[in-house]
Length: 154
Image (cartoon, rainbow, N blue to C red; front, side):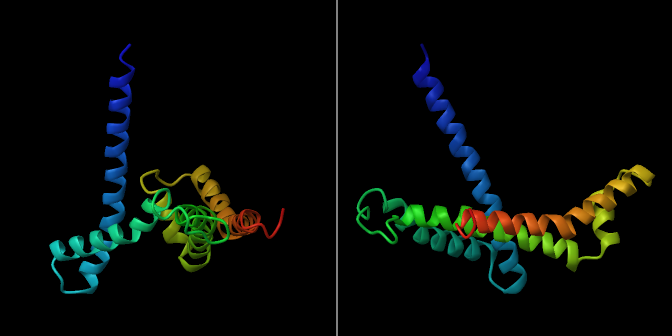
């Protein structure tokens, strides 16, 4: 009893969670364009929202009207899923690990990581271990994951 109500509530809350996540992603683009251009926030939000909406149409139609459109035996939605999960996600992680490990100042990174913990030897050892892992181990392992999910290695 009450299954219909619970399913409605579940999907309502899921929709709210998805909406708030997309707002935070949109905000990153909006704040970047606000800093780089002289456009108003309102125009930037409308413009980016329209672009995202238009770019999302092929994925939304890939299970209906455009289900016959295939590339490598994948519809548009599956291609976008593959690109985001198997290409962009590992490459993004790899770039972040390389940037933090090799591009940023070690003292600044560890200072931000342990801000508010005070100065203790345990934190210093953990920080050194963490920085070593991010600088040397994480890029190698992420690259191996990338090679694995793209099918280069099995």
